Length: 83
Image (cartoon, rainbow, N blue to C red; front, side, top):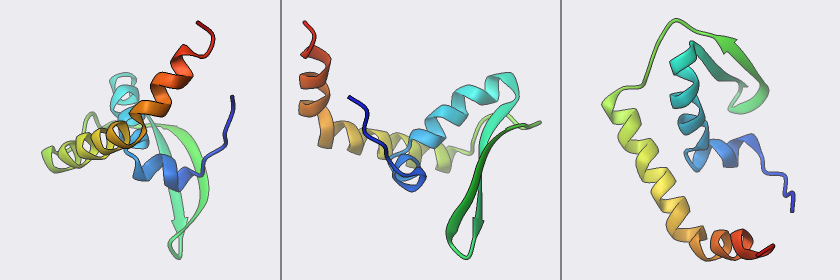
């Protein structure tokens, strides 16, 4: 299955934070450019910072946790489809 999601949905569920947390290890990040509250570009970039603030991490963990709670049944079903 492939279901396209918007960058805003990806970001609001905490996935951009999670991906960037990993990418920071290598000095990279996925950057999102906004104009008038609308996403106009998304691109990978080399960065010199590593990690996020405690507040950002807390928000990220909460977002990911909410996603898991709201989607656990579907995720389990999808994981078992080919077994």
